[in-house]
Length: 432
Image 1 (cartoon, rainbow, N blue to C red):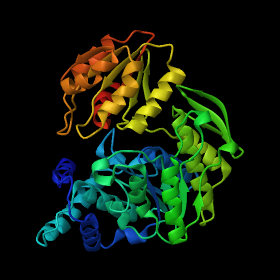
Image 2: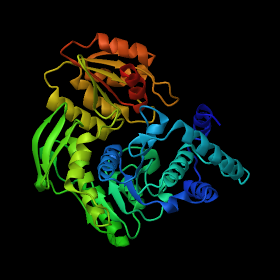
Image 3: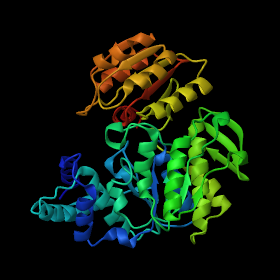
Image 4: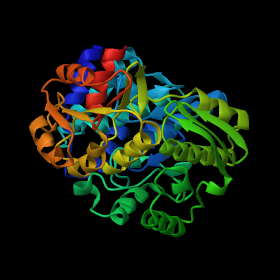
Protein backbone atom coordinates (compact mmCIF):
# COMPACT_ATOMS: atom_id res chain seq x y z
CA UNK A 1 0.00 0.00 0.00
CA UNK A 2 1.41 3.39 -1.03
CA UNK A 3 1.03 6.56 1.06
CA UNK A 4 -1.66 7.95 -1.26
CA UNK A 5 -3.52 4.64 -1.17
CA UNK A 6 -3.36 4.67 2.62
CA UNK A 7 -4.78 8.20 2.87
CA UNK A 8 -7.47 7.37 0.31
CA UNK A 9 -8.42 4.29 2.30
CA UNK A 10 -8.63 6.20 5.61
CA UNK A 11 -10.67 9.04 4.13
CA UNK A 12 -13.00 6.61 2.35
CA UNK A 13 -14.24 5.25 5.68
CA UNK A 14 -17.61 6.39 6.99
CA UNK A 15 -17.48 9.73 8.78
CA UNK A 16 -20.00 8.92 11.50
CA UNK A 17 -21.91 5.90 12.80
CA UNK A 18 -24.96 6.00 15.06
CA UNK A 19 -24.03 2.74 16.78
CA UNK A 20 -21.46 2.60 19.59
CA UNK A 21 -17.97 3.70 18.61
CA UNK A 22 -16.46 1.83 21.55
CA UNK A 23 -17.52 -1.57 20.23
CA UNK A 24 -15.79 -0.92 16.91
CA UNK A 25 -12.60 0.69 18.20
CA UNK A 26 -12.25 -1.88 20.98
CA UNK A 27 -12.58 -4.74 18.50
CA UNK A 28 -10.13 -3.12 16.06
CA UNK A 29 -7.54 -2.55 18.79
CA UNK A 30 -8.01 -6.11 20.06
CA UNK A 31 -7.24 -7.45 16.58
CA UNK A 32 -4.16 -5.18 16.48
CA UNK A 33 -2.81 -6.52 19.78
CA UNK A 34 -4.19 -3.80 22.09
CA UNK A 35 -1.37 -1.25 21.59
CA UNK A 36 -3.17 1.29 23.82
CA UNK A 37 -2.48 -0.92 26.85
CA UNK A 38 1.27 -0.39 26.38
CA UNK A 39 1.03 3.40 26.70
CA UNK A 40 0.62 6.11 29.34
CA UNK A 41 -1.87 8.82 28.39
CA UNK A 42 -2.91 12.33 29.24
CA UNK A 43 -6.43 12.71 27.83
CA UNK A 44 -7.52 16.21 26.74
CA UNK A 45 -11.16 17.15 26.14
CA UNK A 46 -12.92 20.49 25.67
CA UNK A 47 -14.49 22.71 23.04
CA UNK A 48 -11.56 25.02 22.30
CA UNK A 49 -7.85 24.97 23.11
CA UNK A 50 -7.17 21.21 23.07
CA UNK A 51 -4.51 21.51 20.38
CA UNK A 52 -2.72 24.38 22.10
CA UNK A 53 -2.61 22.69 25.52
CA UNK A 54 -1.57 19.28 24.19
CA UNK A 55 1.09 20.73 21.88
CA UNK A 56 2.54 22.90 24.66
CA UNK A 57 2.82 19.83 26.88
CA UNK A 58 4.45 17.80 24.12
CA UNK A 59 7.18 20.44 23.73
CA UNK A 60 7.71 20.64 27.50
CA UNK A 61 8.13 16.87 27.84
CA UNK A 62 10.34 16.63 24.76
CA UNK A 63 12.55 19.35 26.26
CA UNK A 64 12.80 17.21 29.42
CA UNK A 65 14.13 14.29 27.37
CA UNK A 66 11.04 12.10 27.11
CA UNK A 67 9.76 10.34 24.00
CA UNK A 68 6.41 12.04 23.47
CA UNK A 69 3.37 11.07 21.42
CA UNK A 70 0.86 13.71 20.31
CA UNK A 71 -2.55 13.04 18.75
CA UNK A 72 -4.54 16.08 17.59
CA UNK A 73 -7.15 17.14 15.05
CA UNK A 74 -7.79 18.52 12.54
CA UNK A 75 -4.65 18.90 10.45
CA UNK A 76 -3.57 22.09 8.69
CA UNK A 77 -0.35 21.12 6.91
CA UNK A 78 -0.80 17.42 6.10
CA UNK A 79 -2.46 14.31 7.54
CA UNK A 80 0.65 13.31 9.48
CA UNK A 81 0.34 16.47 11.58
CA UNK A 82 -2.31 14.63 13.60
CA UNK A 83 0.12 11.92 14.77
CA UNK A 84 3.52 13.09 16.04
CA UNK A 85 6.41 11.74 18.08
CA UNK A 86 8.74 14.36 19.53
CA UNK A 87 6.97 16.99 17.40
CA UNK A 88 7.82 15.19 14.16
CA UNK A 89 5.00 14.03 11.90
CA UNK A 90 4.52 10.31 11.37
CA UNK A 91 6.34 9.36 8.16
CA UNK A 92 4.57 8.48 4.93
CA UNK A 93 6.19 5.05 5.13
CA UNK A 94 4.77 4.36 8.59
CA UNK A 95 1.35 5.57 7.51
CA UNK A 96 1.50 3.16 4.55
CA UNK A 97 2.68 0.06 6.43
CA UNK A 98 0.49 0.52 9.51
CA UNK A 99 -2.61 1.37 7.50
CA UNK A 100 -2.11 -1.81 5.44
CA UNK A 101 -2.12 -3.77 8.71
CA UNK A 102 -5.25 -1.95 9.89
CA UNK A 103 -7.01 -2.66 6.61
CA UNK A 104 -6.47 -6.40 7.11
CA UNK A 105 -8.30 -6.13 10.43
CA UNK A 106 -11.10 -3.86 9.22
CA UNK A 107 -11.77 -6.26 6.33
CA UNK A 108 -12.24 -8.98 8.95
CA UNK A 109 -14.46 -6.70 11.04
CA UNK A 110 -16.72 -5.99 8.09
CA UNK A 111 -17.49 -9.70 7.93
CA UNK A 112 -18.70 -9.21 11.52
CA UNK A 113 -20.88 -6.25 10.41
CA UNK A 114 -18.58 -3.72 12.11
CA UNK A 115 -17.42 -0.75 10.04
CA UNK A 116 -14.81 1.51 11.70
CA UNK A 117 -15.03 5.22 10.87
CA UNK A 118 -12.34 7.63 9.66
CA UNK A 119 -11.65 8.80 13.21
CA UNK A 120 -11.58 5.28 14.65
CA UNK A 121 -9.11 4.09 12.03
CA UNK A 122 -6.96 7.18 12.60
CA UNK A 123 -7.05 6.62 16.38
CA UNK A 124 -5.95 3.01 15.91
CA UNK A 125 -3.17 4.15 13.58
CA UNK A 126 -1.95 6.59 16.24
CA UNK A 127 -1.94 3.99 19.01
CA UNK A 128 -0.04 1.50 16.82
CA UNK A 129 2.54 4.13 15.94
CA UNK A 130 3.03 5.37 19.52
CA UNK A 131 3.51 1.80 20.75
CA UNK A 132 5.93 1.07 17.90
CA UNK A 133 7.90 4.20 18.80
CA UNK A 134 7.97 3.24 22.51
CA UNK A 135 6.58 6.58 23.71
CA UNK A 136 7.01 7.44 27.39
CA UNK A 137 3.82 9.51 27.42
CA UNK A 138 1.05 10.33 24.93
CA UNK A 139 -0.98 13.55 24.88
CA UNK A 140 -4.28 12.40 23.43
CA UNK A 141 -6.84 14.89 22.18
CA UNK A 142 -10.45 13.67 22.18
CA UNK A 143 -12.35 14.07 18.93
CA UNK A 144 -15.94 15.13 19.62
CA UNK A 145 -17.21 14.89 23.16
CA UNK A 146 -15.59 12.52 25.60
CA UNK A 147 -17.51 9.62 27.09
CA UNK A 148 -18.61 8.26 23.71
CA UNK A 149 -15.50 9.35 21.80
CA UNK A 150 -13.39 6.53 20.39
CA UNK A 151 -10.31 7.84 22.24
CA UNK A 152 -12.07 6.95 25.50
CA UNK A 153 -11.27 3.30 24.90
CA UNK A 154 -7.97 3.81 26.74
CA UNK A 155 -7.35 2.64 30.32
CA UNK A 156 -7.39 5.27 33.08
CA UNK A 157 -5.10 8.09 31.94
CA UNK A 158 -2.54 9.75 34.18
CA UNK A 159 -4.45 12.99 33.77
CA UNK A 160 -7.65 14.31 32.25
CA UNK A 161 -7.44 17.92 31.10
CA UNK A 162 -10.50 20.03 30.30
CA UNK A 163 -9.91 23.07 28.12
CA UNK A 164 -12.54 25.77 27.58
CA UNK A 165 -16.04 24.27 27.28
CA UNK A 166 -18.80 26.05 25.33
CA UNK A 167 -21.58 25.29 22.85
CA UNK A 168 -20.51 23.31 19.78
CA UNK A 169 -21.70 20.08 18.13
CA UNK A 170 -24.94 20.60 20.06
CA UNK A 171 -26.79 18.10 17.88
CA UNK A 172 -24.49 15.38 19.22
CA UNK A 173 -23.44 16.59 22.68
CA UNK A 174 -26.42 18.53 24.00
CA UNK A 175 -27.73 22.08 23.88
CA UNK A 176 -26.41 23.40 27.21
CA UNK A 177 -22.95 23.81 28.70
CA UNK A 178 -23.92 21.39 31.49
CA UNK A 179 -24.86 18.65 29.02
CA UNK A 180 -21.71 19.14 26.99
CA UNK A 181 -19.54 19.16 30.12
CA UNK A 182 -21.23 15.96 31.28
CA UNK A 183 -20.37 14.22 28.00
CA UNK A 184 -16.79 15.49 28.08
CA UNK A 185 -16.30 14.57 31.76
CA UNK A 186 -16.98 10.97 30.74
CA UNK A 187 -13.23 10.61 30.14
CA UNK A 188 -12.59 10.84 33.90
CA UNK A 189 -11.63 7.45 35.33
CA UNK A 190 -10.70 6.37 38.82
CA UNK A 191 -7.00 6.93 39.46
CA UNK A 192 -6.64 9.96 37.16
CA UNK A 193 -5.77 13.52 38.15
CA UNK A 194 -8.09 16.16 36.69
CA UNK A 195 -7.02 19.62 35.46
CA UNK A 196 -9.37 22.37 34.23
CA UNK A 197 -8.91 25.58 32.26
CA UNK A 198 -9.17 28.53 34.71
CA UNK A 199 -12.57 29.71 35.94
CA UNK A 200 -11.34 33.29 36.45
CA UNK A 201 -9.41 35.67 34.26
CA UNK A 202 -11.62 38.21 32.51
CA UNK A 203 -9.25 40.91 33.80
CA UNK A 204 -6.55 39.31 31.63
CA UNK A 205 -8.80 39.37 28.55
CA UNK A 206 -9.81 35.73 28.16
CA UNK A 207 -13.18 34.07 28.70
CA UNK A 208 -13.03 31.89 31.81
CA UNK A 209 -14.34 28.35 32.21
CA UNK A 210 -18.05 28.57 32.93
CA UNK A 211 -19.23 27.79 36.45
CA UNK A 212 -21.70 25.23 35.08
CA UNK A 213 -18.88 23.28 33.43
CA UNK A 214 -16.68 23.40 36.53
CA UNK A 215 -19.53 22.13 38.70
CA UNK A 216 -20.09 19.11 36.42
CA UNK A 217 -16.38 18.25 36.31
CA UNK A 218 -15.97 18.60 40.07
CA UNK A 219 -19.00 16.36 40.66
CA UNK A 220 -17.49 13.65 38.43
CA UNK A 221 -14.19 13.97 40.33
CA UNK A 222 -15.97 13.44 43.65
CA UNK A 223 -17.79 10.41 42.24
CA UNK A 224 -14.56 8.79 41.00
CA UNK A 225 -12.27 9.95 43.82
CA UNK A 226 -10.07 11.98 41.47
CA UNK A 227 -8.08 15.03 42.57
CA UNK A 228 -9.03 18.31 40.87
CA UNK A 229 -6.68 21.21 40.03
CA UNK A 230 -7.07 24.53 38.24
CA UNK A 231 -4.69 27.44 37.49
CA UNK A 232 -4.74 30.13 40.19
CA UNK A 233 -5.02 33.50 38.49
CA UNK A 234 -3.64 35.34 41.52
CA UNK A 235 -0.32 33.74 40.54
CA UNK A 236 -0.53 35.31 37.04
CA UNK A 237 1.10 38.64 36.16
CA UNK A 238 0.88 39.90 32.58
CA UNK A 239 3.98 41.79 31.43
CA UNK A 240 3.33 42.27 27.70
CA UNK A 241 0.87 41.04 25.10
CA UNK A 242 0.57 41.93 21.41
CA UNK A 243 0.05 40.41 17.99
CA UNK A 244 3.39 38.61 18.27
CA UNK A 245 2.62 36.82 21.55
CA UNK A 246 2.77 37.37 25.28
CA UNK A 247 5.21 37.61 28.17
CA UNK A 248 3.91 36.85 31.65
CA UNK A 249 4.81 35.39 35.02
CA UNK A 250 2.90 32.41 36.35
CA UNK A 251 3.66 30.73 39.65
CA UNK A 252 7.13 32.25 39.64
CA UNK A 253 7.95 31.22 36.05
CA UNK A 254 8.86 33.89 33.49
CA UNK A 255 7.06 32.64 30.37
CA UNK A 256 7.27 33.85 26.78
CA UNK A 257 5.00 32.52 24.04
CA UNK A 258 4.68 33.41 20.38
CA UNK A 259 1.00 32.41 20.44
CA UNK A 260 -1.28 35.41 20.04
CA UNK A 261 -4.34 36.07 22.18
CA UNK A 262 -5.25 36.24 25.85
CA UNK A 263 -6.96 32.84 25.64
CA UNK A 264 -3.56 31.30 24.84
CA UNK A 265 -2.25 32.56 28.17
CA UNK A 266 -5.06 30.60 29.83
CA UNK A 267 -4.24 27.53 27.74
CA UNK A 268 -0.56 27.75 28.65
CA UNK A 269 -1.06 28.11 32.40
CA UNK A 270 -3.38 25.09 32.18
CA UNK A 271 -0.49 23.18 30.60
CA UNK A 272 1.86 24.42 33.34
CA UNK A 273 -0.45 23.08 36.07
CA UNK A 274 -0.66 19.77 34.19
CA UNK A 275 3.13 19.46 33.90
CA UNK A 276 3.65 20.18 37.58
CA UNK A 277 1.06 17.58 38.59
CA UNK A 278 2.64 14.99 36.29
CA UNK A 279 5.85 15.41 38.27
CA UNK A 280 3.92 13.79 41.12
CA UNK A 281 3.36 10.79 38.83
CA UNK A 282 7.07 10.17 38.44
CA UNK A 283 8.08 12.48 35.58
CA UNK A 284 11.11 14.73 36.01
CA UNK A 285 10.14 18.14 34.63
CA UNK A 286 12.17 21.20 35.61
CA UNK A 287 11.05 24.83 35.57
CA UNK A 288 13.49 25.40 32.70
CA UNK A 289 11.86 22.57 30.72
CA UNK A 290 8.51 24.31 31.09
CA UNK A 291 9.85 27.76 30.18
CA UNK A 292 11.92 26.52 27.21
CA UNK A 293 9.23 24.17 25.92
CA UNK A 294 6.60 26.91 25.86
CA UNK A 295 8.98 29.42 24.28
CA UNK A 296 9.81 27.04 21.42
CA UNK A 297 6.39 25.80 20.39
CA UNK A 298 4.16 27.06 17.62
CA UNK A 299 0.91 25.69 16.29
CA UNK A 300 -0.36 26.30 12.73
CA UNK A 301 -3.71 27.92 12.06
CA UNK A 302 -4.36 29.30 15.54
CA UNK A 303 -4.14 33.10 15.23
CA UNK A 304 -1.02 32.47 13.19
CA UNK A 305 0.70 35.44 11.55
CA UNK A 306 1.93 34.31 8.14
CA UNK A 307 2.73 37.74 6.68
CA UNK A 308 3.54 41.13 8.18
CA UNK A 309 3.33 43.28 5.04
CA UNK A 310 0.43 43.15 4.60
CA UNK A 311 -0.52 41.63 7.95
CA UNK A 312 -2.20 38.26 7.33
CA UNK A 313 -3.50 36.16 10.23
CA UNK A 314 -4.93 32.65 9.96
CA UNK A 315 -7.34 31.33 12.59
CA UNK A 316 -9.32 28.13 12.11
CA UNK A 317 -11.69 28.77 15.03
CA UNK A 318 -15.15 27.69 13.94
CA UNK A 319 -17.53 28.19 16.87
CA UNK A 320 -18.81 31.06 18.99
CA UNK A 321 -16.17 30.61 21.69
CA UNK A 322 -13.36 30.80 19.14
CA UNK A 323 -14.96 33.82 17.51
CA UNK A 324 -15.14 35.66 20.83
CA UNK A 325 -11.42 35.03 21.32
CA UNK A 326 -10.68 36.30 17.79
CA UNK A 327 -12.80 39.42 18.36
CA UNK A 328 -11.00 40.09 21.65
CA UNK A 329 -7.69 39.84 19.80
CA UNK A 330 -8.85 42.31 17.12
CA UNK A 331 -10.07 44.79 19.73
CA UNK A 332 -6.90 44.47 21.80
CA UNK A 333 -4.24 44.56 19.08
CA UNK A 334 -5.76 45.67 15.75
CA UNK A 335 -8.20 48.42 16.72
CA UNK A 336 -6.24 50.95 14.63
CA UNK A 337 -6.41 48.85 11.45
CA UNK A 338 -9.04 48.35 8.78
CA UNK A 339 -9.91 44.65 8.82
CA UNK A 340 -10.63 42.54 5.76
CA UNK A 341 -12.11 39.16 6.65
CA UNK A 342 -11.91 36.07 4.43
CA UNK A 343 -14.26 33.45 5.79
CA UNK A 344 -16.09 30.19 5.23
CA UNK A 345 -18.13 27.96 7.52
CA UNK A 346 -19.47 24.44 7.60
CA UNK A 347 -23.25 24.19 7.20
CA UNK A 348 -23.67 22.55 10.60
CA UNK A 349 -22.08 25.47 12.49
CA UNK A 350 -23.98 28.30 14.16
CA UNK A 351 -22.34 30.82 11.88
CA UNK A 352 -25.03 33.47 12.43
CA UNK A 353 -23.90 33.97 16.03
CA UNK A 354 -20.24 34.11 15.01
CA UNK A 355 -20.94 36.61 12.24
CA UNK A 356 -22.89 38.78 14.65
CA UNK A 357 -19.71 39.07 16.73
CA UNK A 358 -17.06 39.64 14.08
CA UNK A 359 -18.79 41.28 11.12
CA UNK A 360 -19.23 44.67 12.85
CA UNK A 361 -15.44 44.83 13.34
CA UNK A 362 -14.65 44.43 9.62
CA UNK A 363 -14.41 46.90 6.76
CA UNK A 364 -14.65 44.17 4.10
CA UNK A 365 -15.80 40.54 4.17
CA UNK A 366 -15.14 37.97 1.45
CA UNK A 367 -17.08 34.72 1.76
CA UNK A 368 -16.07 31.54 -0.01
CA UNK A 369 -16.79 27.82 0.06
CA UNK A 370 -14.18 25.18 0.86
CA UNK A 371 -13.70 22.01 -1.16
CA UNK A 372 -15.64 20.06 1.42
CA UNK A 373 -19.11 18.54 1.36
CA UNK A 374 -20.36 20.37 4.45
CA UNK A 375 -19.22 23.80 3.30
CA UNK A 376 -21.89 26.52 3.38
CA UNK A 377 -22.42 28.60 0.25
CA UNK A 378 -20.99 32.14 0.10
CA UNK A 379 -24.46 33.46 -0.73
CA UNK A 380 -26.00 32.00 2.43
CA UNK A 381 -23.20 33.47 4.53
CA UNK A 382 -23.62 36.88 2.85
CA UNK A 383 -27.33 36.86 3.65
CA UNK A 384 -26.58 36.09 7.29
CA UNK A 385 -23.94 38.84 7.54
CA UNK A 386 -25.85 41.54 5.64
CA UNK A 387 -27.57 43.09 8.72
CA UNK A 388 -24.18 43.89 10.27
CA UNK A 389 -22.93 46.23 7.54
CA UNK A 390 -19.57 46.29 5.79
CA UNK A 391 -18.69 45.58 2.18
CA UNK A 392 -19.51 41.94 1.42
CA UNK A 393 -18.26 39.88 -1.52
CA UNK A 394 -18.70 36.26 -2.63
CA UNK A 395 -16.10 34.14 -4.40
CA UNK A 396 -16.44 30.42 -5.12
CA UNK A 397 -12.86 29.17 -5.05
CA UNK A 398 -10.51 29.75 -2.13
CA UNK A 399 -7.74 30.97 -4.45
CA UNK A 400 -9.92 33.63 -6.09
CA UNK A 401 -11.34 34.55 -2.69
CA UNK A 402 -7.85 35.09 -1.27
CA UNK A 403 -6.84 37.27 -4.23
CA UNK A 404 -10.01 39.32 -3.79
CA UNK A 405 -9.48 39.72 -0.04
CA UNK A 406 -5.84 40.71 -0.55
CA UNK A 407 -6.84 43.36 -3.10
CA UNK A 408 -9.19 44.88 -0.51
CA UNK A 409 -6.53 45.00 2.23
CA UNK A 410 -4.71 48.31 2.72
CA UNK A 411 -0.95 48.12 3.27
CA UNK A 412 -1.56 49.28 6.83
CA UNK A 413 -4.62 47.07 7.26
CA UNK A 414 -5.00 43.43 8.22
CA UNK A 415 -6.40 40.38 6.45
CA UNK A 416 -7.85 37.71 8.72
CA UNK A 417 -8.75 34.26 7.42
CA UNK A 418 -11.18 32.51 9.77
CA UNK A 419 -14.19 30.26 10.31
CA UNK A 420 -12.87 26.93 9.08
CA UNK A 421 -9.71 24.86 9.45
CA UNK A 422 -10.35 23.60 5.91
CA UNK A 423 -10.15 27.16 4.54
CA UNK A 424 -7.10 27.97 6.67
CA UNK A 425 -5.39 24.84 5.35
CA UNK A 426 -6.08 25.89 1.75
CA UNK A 427 -4.90 29.48 2.24
CA UNK A 428 -1.81 28.49 4.23
CA UNK A 429 -0.46 26.73 1.13
CA UNK A 430 0.16 30.17 -0.40
CA UNK A 431 2.75 30.88 2.32
CA UNK A 432 5.00 27.81 1.97
